[in-house]
Figure 1 (cartoon, rainbow, N blue to C red):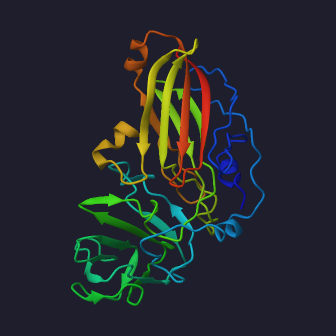
Figure 2: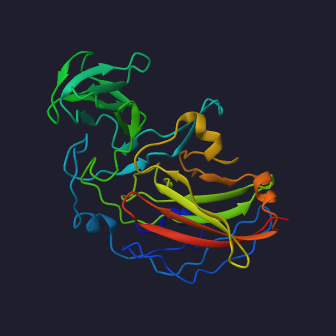
Figure 3: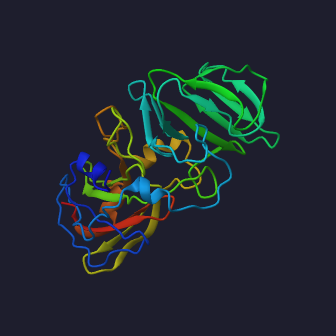
Length: 328
């Protein structure tokens, strides 16, 4: 796997890339765009040729709990990130992904990651939750349970179930104080290392006149077929809008920040723009974020702007793109 794997799948032949230190590359070129044209920033730094799996072994940081699959102390491939768009039931269900999808073969044993009491979800019989005395809840979706509701389980000793066919993954989530939190945040599940670099694929004025950005990240470890080479969502997307003379029209704002938690599902249409889709087998999702509504953009009173977008992951790897926009 190389850091261009997901980008090539998305048909973005060039992308802004940062060094692993997170230092932003300067002198980013901009491309003028009219409505609905896509501009791709120019690549400035060649991706590293080192194998990600080999680099992952060389980096460690403190973590609170281990993985729910054996070996517990080795990073596993994650094909769905916290905050990814999730759309189901012909668009009637629209929400932010409230956990991470850990890829593994069907039938793989899934272990409790904390000692506590297990419960089978009353509406989802293939979902097991484990609640500790401090009310922290870990839940494991798409598993065939081998425990009963009310049973006491022991961290990393009790098998709570096996991955249900045909899902090929366990959806793992953590809830604290009635809010879902990112299992891949610093100091949570580990070991976890991410040395890939998210990118800004495009910034456009869409047909409605709204300012929309597409941003993507790739999985730290390659995912087995058929879910290979599909994107995941950067943890943070920030942006600002400048006039062509360099004056600040809108200062730095945060479009999304999934490092700790996610918005409520009711915020979906405020965050995501028209045309957003989730990943499907051999069909990459489109992660389209709404930055400025058409009326708000027109109220600024300019025809042309420069939008600067910065994207980062939970480990601080990031990229920054600056793109010229024409609103008419």
